[in-house]
Length: 41
Image (cartoon, rainbow, N blue to C red; front, side, top):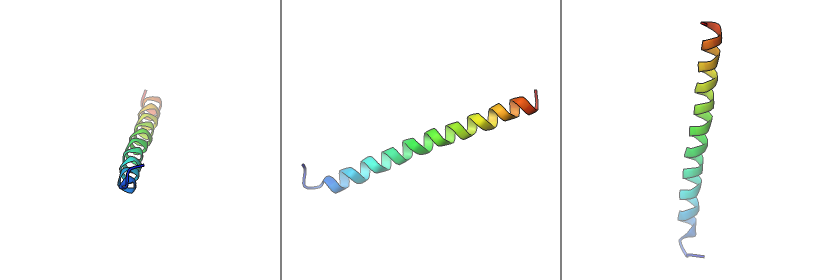
């Protein structure tokens, strides 16, 4: 492995966290949108 693999792992963790947040936020927004469609239909 490369000597500075710690930095690479931190970067990968950062990107994974960003992706995870995007997915979670997207799901929350979708649920809120679906509920609003149900309640205000």
